[in-house]
Image 1 (cartoon, rainbow, N blue to C red):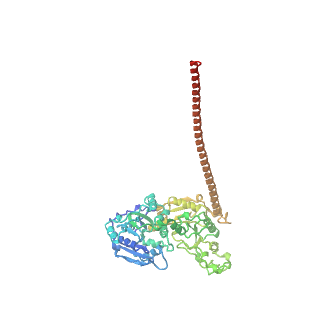
Image 2 (cartoon, rainbow, N blue to C red; image 1 turned 120 degrees about the horizontal axis):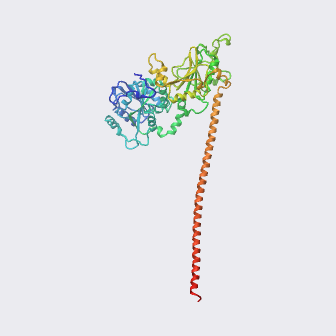
Image 3 (cartoon, rainbow, N blue to C red; image 1 turned 120 degrees about the vertical axis):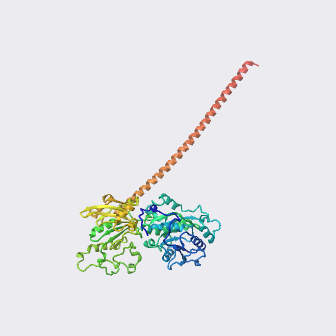
Length: 606
């Protein structure tokens, strides 16, 4: 497999061949999870039996997830098709996919739903990309069938697909489309310019393919999830440095609508708690203060080996006091050099609670573990104050029961699955806003590395570094022997040097112990100030609303005044007309009387 250098998600640097104009060599396993729906499965397999991808390189693994009656293999299906039962002990799509992947032999895993009718070159459209790079996730394009007419038979589907006539098999539903995916893709130049935080959004499981080795590397499916497993897997693939390719030519029909289309509010309500715990990019789902999460947004690494307790404490406390609510800290050092005999539960804790899951720390990041599974390190013989490992013991004693802090001999190359890692030398303290500000800067242009110059010593420049997990993972995959990872990251994602003071990273002597009595006081102060600003904003909104209401009232009064003025003006005009008429009538009456008198004078007395 190849490892070409793809900057960000710009798969356009790859020279993808036209359909039918290349020679396949990789094997693919189409894994189809199904529970019931034999009639739709028959159409899915019929379409797969007429694919342009070579049959000897293609297998289909249908996973029966507890169907009653059990699914059967229809007459029309690809030659290498088999039905396997989902592994015992669980149910759901993730569980079935994990069982199907374990049974699959292909170099590429193509997940396909059991209600998909593929166009003739659907599999080929996916597979041409996987021959170019071994870290691509290819997404097909769905069309949804309208609920009209009688569906075709399996034989009719096979015949139509073989003749490249899949497009006329069904009538498209104009009311149901993946418009939101189309908009995301179009807004980001075919998704080539999509930032890392958006990639997992388009990882819709109905038709998606990826290298089997990549799927294994990220841990496979999260079988604890009943729904939303495709979104969560897409997030982990992002952190592994995968490139997401939406292929408009990988067309297929979705028979009917999805559950997310039929019951969107219920699906969202169900998924939000689980996605919030696992996908730090969903910042809107992590708005609750004081929470701890399964996957932190940023891992802060502080090396405690050879550092003083005070310096380590200053750095860790500064990180934990961040305005970001989801920070995890990893303390590295020679922890195994501290003996750790079994220690009984504290007398103040009832034995029934000492093993309670609610009191245990949350799981470590992959590659990390608690260095003291049996309790606090034992004190070496002799005076404890003279223990050469005293500082290490004090650090462990300070943070052993803080669920946000882990102990490790060393950290793995990336902070997977956390999206960011800040490596901070002991004795340097990030300010309350430092982590949030650095991540905001990195996200502005999807940069892979920020290097913060702290001070210059006789041995060189002391730095802190914020790494994007996806960028480091990509660099590890494509770097040549002896090549600097930082150079590769800079080439593919970008790297920037910053100064410490501008980003509020200060030495402990200046930042500590000014708030040592309450390590969360600075975060509390910022939160209180934010709440105060929020209240001020609410008051301002209320004032604006009141002014708008008053303005509406004034406008209504003005309009009423205008109407009244017009009415009085009309009445005045009417009175004037009446007065003129009366005046004219009076004049006519005087004239008539005068005329009568004249006529009397002319005639004389009778």
